[in-house]
Image (cartoon, rainbow, N blue to C red):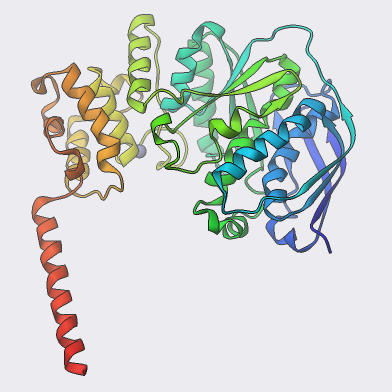
Length: 418
Ligand SMILES: [Zn+2]
């Protein structure tokens, strides 16, 4: 039987959309059919046309259908979105030339949706460095903040979500703008393990390599329509200099081609390095007096920064490098805790790309500050060779010796068997 999903009904209740669908063919294993796709907004959806309401579901199905050469049959679709799909797919094809991306979308009725006024812009907001950079760079537009529950914060982590929500409310107040929350099971309606396995040729996993970009962005379609947003920003996490060296579902070659109704998507901040972004944020806070509590850490279950992990450390060092105190940017730690974090990162961590990540921070630090202006717990960072960060000189030596001995022993045993 051919791989196919037939969308039978789109049910719009007050603030929730449910999708009724049937899956056929062997790709059924890539679905969790006891988790039927739904989305929920803190918005009244009663004026939302079905052709816009279908977009979150359709967009989350599309990459699956391309990989499994499946047919999607939908009763209705927005014309702008439908027309944008070939360009979006081209972004995927260029990123994954080793994959055969096929599939087919059959739309029974196409509808045009247009806005009558200019409702400004919106920005997907997770609270990290990338998202806050987008917010400060577009502060004059007062973009509506859009935060999803079901992406990084799991749907069963109500406590984590409470923290995210209160952070969102504070930020919207501080930046004098509004916000929209979305609750979605878009990470649960399909089977991430099966899908990652299906794309293992690509060298990337399903969520990171194929799903999260269009998956997240498409949740903006109902919001964009109801608030007549002309553009939605999604913050980049990669930098243009890394082009061609990574794969990622959220990329300018994909995101910037997604369109619906009169809304375009802007993959924002691709030309700025992470250190540029931190500089924008700290300078903005200084100029405006606004509070910017960054939320960069996913180690602690939802909410605050743990101040123990590599991501926390990297951001803390980035803020020091600009001459600011991380305590004022959402990082809560004592002198003792900084000492232990600093020691762990200096000697006990194994970094894949230590030099790449820490080189630019150190450079900014040397440009902006004298060594003695730093807290003494982290002064070592000022002049260490970045590739040596995380490597204990003695432990490293011991590890090398151990490896050599093992090698010699193995050869001796091998020779003995001959
Ligand atoms: Zn952390």
